[in-house]
Length: 126
Image 1: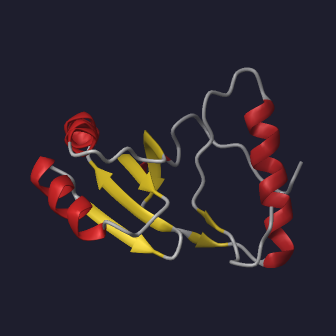
Image 2 (image 1 turned 180 degrees about the vertical axis):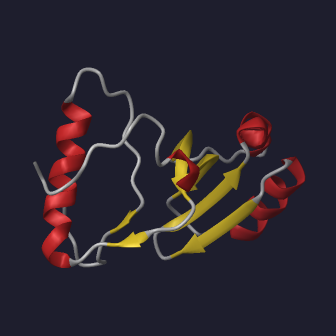
């Protein structure tokens, strides 16, 4: 189904890295967030039109989160998750198929989390 093949458990785990991610929807306080986060042990800060992402190792996630909260900044979203090391572009034709596959996998009772390295087109509404 959906044009894919099932691999063994963990067969693509090498393509992902466990990361702490703290996301802010506003770019308003970028300099302050960068200073606080880096002093608390964050690895990187990525800013774009969507907002600001602060990336940490799993070990430094809690200290960075607590330092930001102590300074009065609460992330809009935050979690420790698996992030793809390299994204694979998905054509507009295949984007719907890939998204349906991800949704079907997430619906399975035995599945706890689904991670992808799919790089969807910017105009994909999925």
